[in-house]
Image (tube, rainbow over all chains, first blue to last red):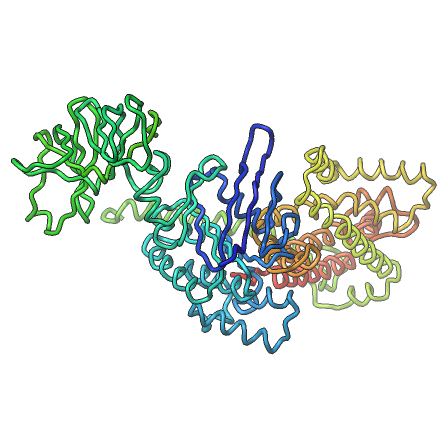
Length: 365
Length: 268
């Protein structure tokens, strides 16, 4: 597959000190679903708006299907956008909204009607064709905005936080719907979000951004299981961080001194002996040991807090050196029928070496 | 009374007091107008109670009063001209204020609003001086220029406020869907500020129609309706004037209905 969008060293500097996007290079394959993920102010929306043509980069090149479009205005790009507030035209009906992008393309009237019907049928709202956007619910407006964008058959569909205005339940449902829509229409999707769950569920590839640069990109499972930095580990999912020092290195398995004991790990990269590192592991990949049970990596401490969140328990354990780590345990039984740890009781946390991240330096976020 | 709920009583009292206040306010606003209309149909020439009988005489007289009809015509001409002129200048000015950032923008905005706050006499005298200086003949056209200047702020404020409330993403969406700047203005921006433009236009028309101070300084030999009424009033209030007043009330009513229909938000 060929790259449909190529960004080459794209920068947006508002002033020498205020930098929106800094030398970002990214290639998006035809038909891919790519998500730009990051906290607000990381430059993800600016990057998307530059692809759409709403902002101009201060340096770099944007190519759409091998054509340089860096300086093309939005109305000359075969790219369409779903806006965060949907931006449906309030003085037009749903049908007129969807038809507008075809009218500007000078599509024949008879054909417009067919395309509008197909697009609205695709999102399941053809019965609303004569209503005004204000009469529809948030989820319905979202779908109309989608229909209006894909009816033009763009080479790339841009989605700017498309689900952020919806309530939680609807958001979950729309995540799957968007994913299925992407599979059905085969158009390349580039979405911006600050919701890591959304990014993991929907995308083929997630691009995590930090201060205008790409921190890491990859498949959702690669980012989750092999974060390249504490920043990524912290932004996607939850991670316990502990400062440490490389005690012994070997082929594969290494041990790290963390103050409250040592921990073995299988790091992705080789690290020098004696080096300062940060150890990380995910709460759901650690467990509390029963009495007498043994395991490879054991951290001893006492229970500091127990939080019930429906699906399970998140237990905070205070280690001997005062550091706190969280451990998740699912509740297969109702709470009343489960053994719930008691605050203050001694506890032992176990985490398998292959579940331990090791990052160079003491840069725990 | 002894076994009544005291809270109920005080609430009832408060409601009554409030309703009385509203009724008094409405009376204060509208009784004079009803009196005016009543006397315009009164057969006696003197404006004293009680009414003596019903007549259309004053309306007939009005119809045959050439000066008055000319004055009405002049007023229409001035108000229409001033409205069109302020809209032609004011709408693009509001768009420029909304769209572009340029040095001195804030000052520009204040300067456009200034004529609203200036007393009409000041605007009138200063424009009179300017026209004299440039050797303009005073006429209804100079009145139109004066009114348009004084009313520009009304149009710019209203249209600018509407533009500020319009989400920026609407225009971007139009661009995104293939419409160039001109087309997106016609198709998307204009329909969404249409009611503000009509509203500002109607308001300008009404304000210009009964304007006296600026007109007083800038008109030549022609008189507008308020000027004519003012000059005849020196001989006392005549039933004819009441008839003119009633007609103006009726026209205002029509104008209000038109504006409500035209500016109704179809979006709701």
